[in-house]
Length: 239
Image (cartoon, rainbow, N blue to C red; front, side):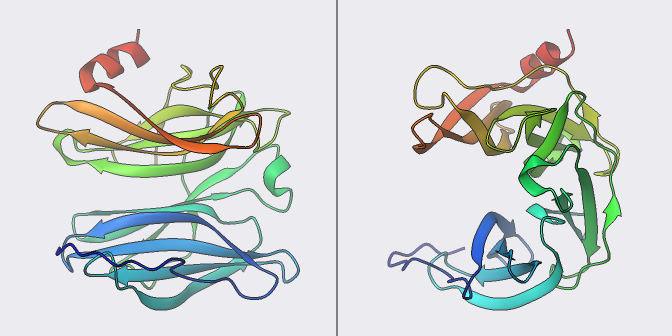
């Protein structure tokens, strides 16, 4: 994919009375394109629409329109992977309570082209004692596993107080979760919550890298980077 300068923000503007959220950047190797999936929420219209943008250079973006629409809060945090020629999209269904939901469901859809998606089906992921909120899923090809950084809040809390866990899967449907907290608030710039995060595996060094968004108690947001040896991380998760 060619690089260039001159990007103009914003890439998209919401319709009246709505807002955009939960953008997810995905590189599609067959087309050599960057794709962005994001949602537009309208509480007044009680709808969530899923949009897609595509770009060959990261600068000029094509609006590929609305892919599908669902009731508000039944689709959060879309994340996409392509394995064996098929695309999968995972989302979180919080139902009508939204940010204060007492439970959520991880759902997945499949597609042959990244545009037309199947109906949602439930995946098997439970973080005991917590409510799954936002996530990003990556397929770690050298390990032949899906890994996910899961932002979740404790039962009885809300989405403004999330922390980070890891989960993994061989099929993207049945997930192994771990009770160990990967990242929680510190005492400085990330002292309120650890929010939506992304991970990759550097196969050349066997390093697992996690970029995480976090907020301070003063409502200032930053992005941090944490990394460690992949095998060491597995041993730590499985003492």
